[in-house]
Amino acid sequence: MGPHADCRKPVAKKDIRHHRPHFFEGEQSGRVRMKRSEKDIVVEQVPVGEFEVFTYFAACPQTRETVIIDPAGEPDRLVTMIREQGLKVKYILNTHGHADHVLANRPLREIFDAPTCMHQDDITFFSRDDVRAASLKEIGLPAPDPADRSIKDGDMLEVGTLKIRVIHTPGHTPGSVC
Ligand SMILES: [Zn+2]
Image 1 (spheres, helix red, strand yellow):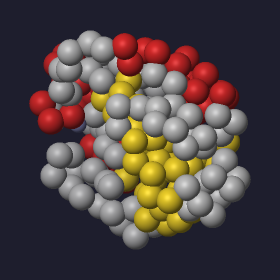
Image 2 (cartoon, rainbow, N blue to C red):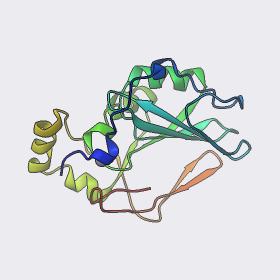
Image 3 (cartoon, protein in one colour):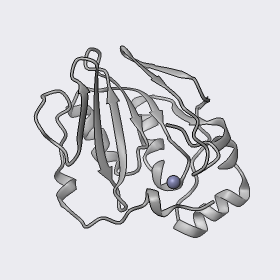
Image 4 (cartoon, rainbow, N blue to C red):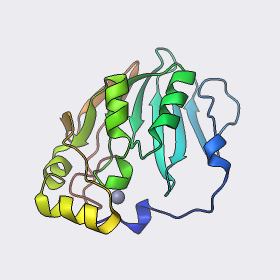
């Protein structure tokens, strides 16, 4: 299974490279900002890389622990952002294993000593030789390394005071999750 149009939307280049979210200050900072409650959770959406795949942060304002969801590229920029905001990376979570969603997994994992998490079905799927070969051939990017931690439907990830529940949504890939 190759990359899909719905997760690789070409967008006109804007000055996203200068985008500097201010997670906790409450001012408008990004193109899209979702703040359910400043007390409970801070969610930031950051478009990264050539295809502007969205990387998400879900952070606990009390502890500044965060999960990074789909670190899709530009690791240096993400690292700077994380350090500027004083975030503590608890988990690196991939919604699925397509190569364009996992590009910054490895550097972030090493720098912040946080485990990568992926559904077991995608760990298995993207370990297959034919799938790995197809990834390289079709988009020139390697399929992900096996995740440190396998997650499944109903799992709860604790991030500070947040509890993030894994919902298995197969279709886009066998192990897609929300
Ligand atoms: Zn995809």
